[in-house]
Image 1 (cartoon, helix red, strand yellow):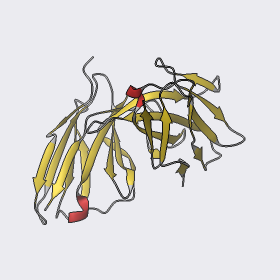
Image 2 (image 1 turned 60 degrees about the vertical axis):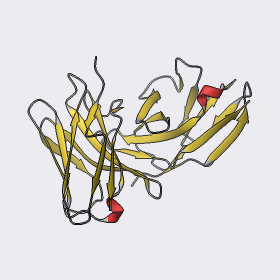
Image 3 (image 1 turned 60 degrees about the horizontal axis):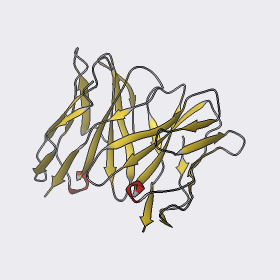
Image 4 (image 1 turned 45 degrees about the vertical axis):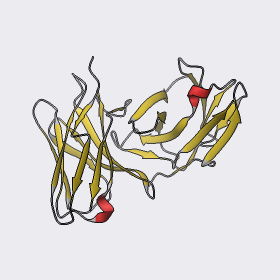
Length: 112
Length: 114
């Protein structure tokens, strides 16, 4: 089976812009979660989608949003980018609830 | 809220020596635990998992971890490390009542020296 794929792999934006990141889960996986990884804060949970519904949300401002499509692919959007949003954004997929999560390679976002 | 503590940010060790990476978590509710490994410029790879059942779990490449509920720990061990084990290791905890939301520790950088 193909693993979790994320596009794009690298992205450079300027402050104030918005960005959309995409994630395709492992075939058959219905849960997609997003995490932000930074040197200072480590790995932090953003949100989880299951069958097109947001099931959990981390402690991030409303500028961070996401959605999931009927084919389980997911997108996350960050509006009004700030310098502190520079990070590696990781997507993970899982078959169901409370099971192993498999991570994609990440999208490295740099905000200038 | 859950918290996960990885007590050592860096662990230097010589090749073929044993190693233990420590992980403690705060929650006493029903949890599941993972160890992930991250190589430079890559995502996280699942190393091993504890969901239920036997408290000793093993991976295919010689790592093992033991779930200790009374000490709320999930330490990772390997009896003999290899240069290729050099990477960052993350412990993660999930709550069985909270879906797939994982709380990660700060990571331990394992540096294997020849």
